[in-house]
Amino acid sequence: MYQIYILWFRQIKKYFRSKSRIVGAIGQPLLFLLALGYGLGSVYKKAGDGNYLHFLVPGIMAQTVLFSAMFYGAMLIFDRQFGFLKETLVAPVSRLRIMIGGALGGATTATLQGFLVLVIAYIIGFRVSHIYMIFFALIIMFVLATAIATFSSGLGSFVQDMQGFQAINQFIIFPLYFLSGALYPLTNVPTWLRIIAEVNPISYTVDAMRYALINQTKFGLEKDIIALLITLVVCIAYGVWQFRRIQT
Amino acid sequence: MPMIEVKNLVKKFGDFRAVDNISFKVKAGERFALLGPNGAGKSTTIKMLTTLLKPTSGELIMNGYNVLKEQNKVRKSFGIVFQDPTVDNDMTAYENMELHAVLYHVPKRDLKSRIKQLLELVELWDKKDILVRNFSGGMRRRLEIARGLLHHPKILFLDEPTVGLDPQTRVLLWNYVNKLAKDKNMTILFTTHYLEEAENNADRIALIDHGNLISIGNLKDLLLKTKSKNLEEAYLKLTGTEIRDEKLEPGVAWKERHRARLR
Ligand SMILES: Nc1ncnc2c1ncn2[C@@H]1O[C@H](COP(=O)(O)OP(=O)(O)OP(=O)(O)O)[C@@H](O)[C@H]1O
Ligand SMILES: [Mg+2]
Image (cartoon, rainbow over all chains, first blue to last red; front, top):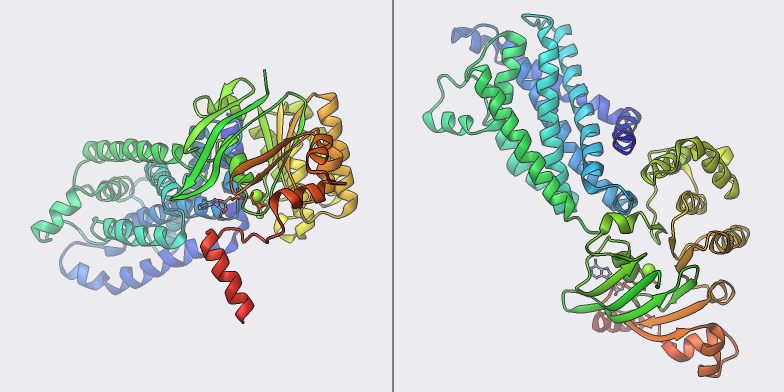
């Protein structure tokens, strides 16, 4: 346990020491909230769907968690390049624990970033429907973050260089995000887009976040939770499988 | 029973045989030097022994465990100082030590005193709270070594441990390592390009070149066999005087050198 803890704590320490990561974590979602929230707000209202900012905030929170958790894989690649990875790989600690410790650290910081977005959203006028449901949102974010962090560490063990990792990020994570219901409602979209969204795990996370924060759901909470758990299991299985085969 | 046993070890990278059918044994408590020119396959051999790399073929046994099948047990048996840096630059010296101590199950009550003792040994105790990124190259190396000595494994690998160290620290390191070997009956396998370090600190010396083991034995036998006065003479007689280009295929290396000459 202590081994997992110290590897987790390492990620937390590194996060708080990196000013640029914290600033970037606030800057990007803020830009999205302001540009999209205010830019598209009137169109959205005219369509008769109500307040776009309210609709958008849970999606942007999920986005932040998604991309921050993906960053954990990049950290792994840095660890490989700077040699530190070897230090952990020869240690008498099972690969599983090493992976869990680091990925939970990455997941914790990603959840924290998601929470920061909520704080920012509050400042610009967002309100949750039930304050205690924030805890539920935190849990959802943490589950998503854990899934994505383990997935990205699997990817990071396998890709090995930053360019390749970025490319996969562009080809998998960006489309998953943009084709989920994070930025627009899935009610009046073309059928193909709806079908893609319905097999996209991110849609369910976003939907669960909306349930928690603004009491709105498209798929229903049960479906959301089942989809989220399946995603978690698949990601962990993939991450562990890849990480076990790692060589330097 | 030997502490380390290497049988017909082969590692291929593509078609290139970095380690080409090497076999040797190291006894418990023995200090064993693995010498050879750049690119000979020393680090690759150590990587396979320390579970970082899978051999193409061959058998590896350490401390009675099969290195390929009982990885976790093997990892409990050894410690290593790598040739390349492996400290985390975004943590302080103390944090690097602490993380290592925890990963290697150093008992909690010994943790602080052990870290202090070793950081004092390499004269970094007063800099323990500085981020490693602000260390000089030599200081980083000293930290790396202090960290490698934190726990007391049965087998200690030192891959060119003294590169970039000042003579004072080199003397300190070898005194400490020799004491560990004697007091704790620790088995030491090290590589170095400072041949006098092997002369002074190795019980037996293996010479490898192009992935092949070309000589193994104690210093006296080696000098006798090659009719040499010292290790350097023996080494050059056995491996030739040609310079090796590390990380390049033999053919490419030759072309590269030619190009440099033409320029
Ligand atoms: N991952 C790899 N892929 C391809 N070739 C490799 C790889 N690792 C090592 N090699 C090659 O294997 C050979 C042996 O390398 P190794 O690092 O074991 O040499 P060494 O004896 O430790 O040399 P040095 O004294 O320079 O440290 C070199 O030719 C090197 O280029
Ligand atoms: Mg080497």
